[in-house]
Length: 365
Ligand code: SF4
Ligand code: SF4
Image (cartoon, rainbow, N blue to C red; front, side, top):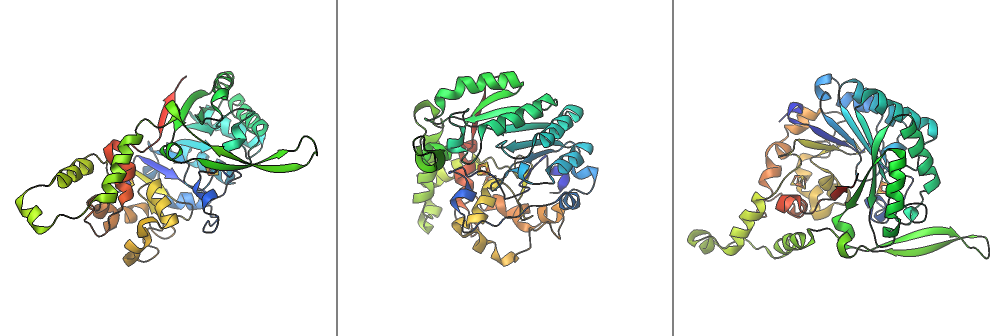
């Protein structure tokens, strides 16, 4: 594999953020979070020629930060669009000033190679409950500046129990701004409740107090493939290696199930030509395994320790070099098998049954 086989690159250009969403990895792991950002010069080093950029999609998102927090975000978008790349930015919309958003909107309008996904989970009364620390009026101001300058994009709304009643007003607002409108369902939101710590003014004593709000997702708002993911999790929890006789005599039901699940994996790297670049400039096949590396889930760092610490660093290696590393080139696909020494069950959980775990997005306009 080399960069010619890659069609989509997710960029986590910073691990910094103004918000504190309760379901986010950065909010849940403050003790291990390192703040890293890369610069436009770092980006140019990683993508040095039009061959690295032209006709590829760059998704500015990530696991640990909001791209608008990076002060080099605008020049990065300029550089990539100038060389024929398509950029999409996902943001909570609550950072930067109107001048910044106008410039971004102008790039979108001029190049037709950029759109923004505003992750706004509610309207005036509820967005701050999940997007803790964001201020709706600032987001509204920024969305106005971006769209007034001709920028195109989407208002993406995660529907929880507490914000469902504001869906119609948000959809109407998106229409006025000229944004598309979509709802998003995340599997984690359907499995877990979150607790948000929200600050608000005490009406009587006129001081700022904090309040804990439980965030739930129930009924039709839940992810439609929750049962498939439970099935994958049950397989992960109970799978045991076949003994010698079972291997010789016949395929056991468990081995048949294993084959069915492994055949159903759709991998961002292997099948979809995607890579992920983390804020510390390490390269991963996807956001899922970067999230695992950040938290050292399933001892992923131990399983990759034999390669040293810099084997996937784009500070001193090219994307081609990392793609040709044996883990990317061969072992990721081989290790979907639970019997492989580098197996990571996350691959089964997030990508089995044709990505049943992954977000469901429905556009309404
Ligand atoms: S806006 Fe994004 S990066 Fe920031 S806390 Fe929320 S989910 Fe995490
Ligand atoms: S979790 Fe595993 S199977 Fe899924 S995209 Fe990442 S590397 Fe591929």
